[in-house]
Image (cartoon, rainbow, N blue to C red):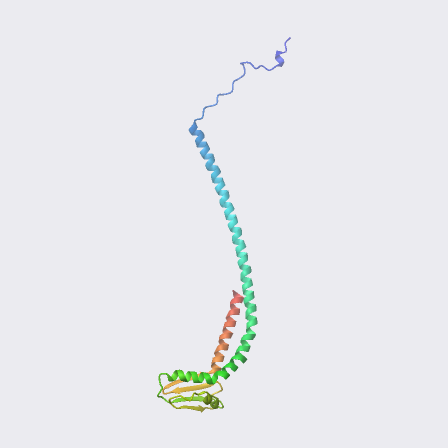
Length: 199
């Protein structure tokens, strides 16, 4: 007996593999282009997604930084206003009144000289509060071409004066000026605190 039945037959009786149909170069090129387009689109989509995520992250970081900066600015502004408030009070209650009192007579003479530029032939009159007439007279220059009279009026308060040249009249009122400055400072401080409180 032979051993042929134990061995595999490699002869021509084996079934042949089905023939592979030939594919043209055009079909292969179309498949390559389709694969390239698919890969390119996937890469583009990944890049756009990554860019959007990076933009979102940067926007969030910027918003946080701006919020921190805004808080720091408002906190600094509030502290600055709190520290300026006492200085403004001292300025308007002590320094400015003293400075105005010291320069009151000079201010009258300067204002009178300005008013006299167009009316040199008209009589001049200065009306001041009681006790201020002598100080104003001593500041008047001796070379005025027309007579200047200085009167004291009990209706006026210190720091208040009326100047008259012909038909022109001017009022100097240091108290009203100080009150206006105080009102302006208080309004500024109030609005600045409101702005810093409510953003």
